[in-house]
Length: 189
Image 1 (cartoon, helix red, strand yellow):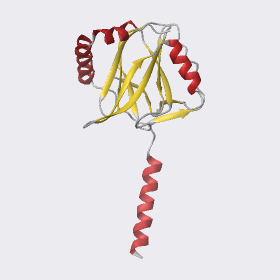
Image 2: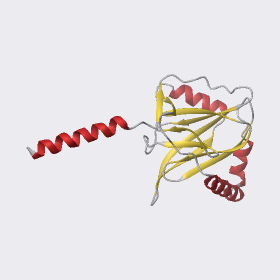
Image 3: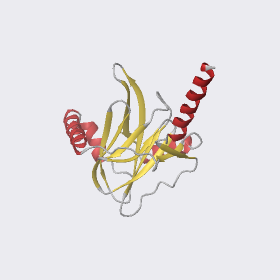
Image 4: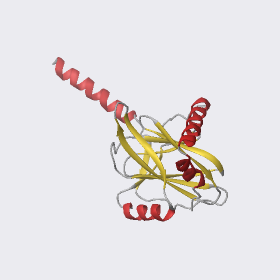
């Protein structure tokens, strides 16, 4: 009798927990048209399946949480013109820095991979327009469009975290001037 009661209570708690949980992302089979509005840029992040395919990876524009990805997703968000960091994280943060221009679309390919002793990391790589649009066309049936769930409370980055990420990017750019140049000079489409 006690085991049945324990099972019933445990089952009820699990159901309550699962029904009360909001997902970080909402998924849609239909994609929006990836076109920038005249006074803003559009950033499109493509994340095909890879290592840790289902792991959630938030995306911040400077300090503001703007979207996220899991495996087999594509997402997009608008950006004010100017220099901005796009930051993502699974176990550790990674970022790119673009000089966004109004009316342009910027494509990023996100890869997820194992890092010994740390866990899982992710990368963001600028993708030429033709390559990105070909990849999207090729993957249209397997990628779902993801967007942040407005009902799920998620945290923006603090000013201190953004300052650290900028300092880290500046240090990296001095050590890797050619790679940094690719990011800063990426002009979008």
